[in-house]
Image (tube, rainbow, N blue to C red):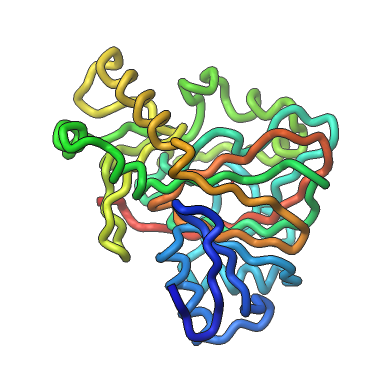
Length: 284
Ligand code: SIN
């Protein structure tokens, strides 16, 4: 793909590109248009050596849409739009260390997520991404036919495949993140979504499943569980993946409508990231 104002260098055969030629601290509309197109083309895009303030990160995010506040997690006191993800040496729990698409429990799940690295381990702490377009395309015709109208049931807490514990219990090995957990109150945190969704901007079909998914509508759990397990395993085949190694000043922006991600918990150093989530539409 070529663009007028930026360059995009793919980082794997499946998805992901490193963008050069853009300074996110002073973005104009022309450069933004290219960035937006690269985001749709590559599903996840990465920038290096960006020096941006929280206000500049928020302004960049707002160009993609309204900012979404996590119903279970408190944002920063000074910047409620930003969730600071922090892991300290000795912490055993890593936020995001399960394959997922953000906010799948929401009737209108997050469109995109922007993660900006403030402090990173010397090695480790990468984030992995999976192309759910590729995962959909890689299913057999018979499987696609059988499941074409099926909906998933998704929850925001007490995931079956993660032991069923509440967030605050699960996060016990990371007191900083456990202290950010809040009660979602009357916000809706359970949702049904099409198993195969159509991307509203590209028109492409994607498999839509992740760790929030607990079952398939209309099926008994003994029928649905093996299918969900199979689809989860299928969706992270190595040929559908890319992996990003962080450095301070790196920024990633991924499209939750066609990407799952996984924070790799393989380090024991301080890692501090600023995350903003952008609101999305009802999946169809
Ligand atoms: C997340 O799931 O949003 C966290 C990703 C990461 O920290 O790498």
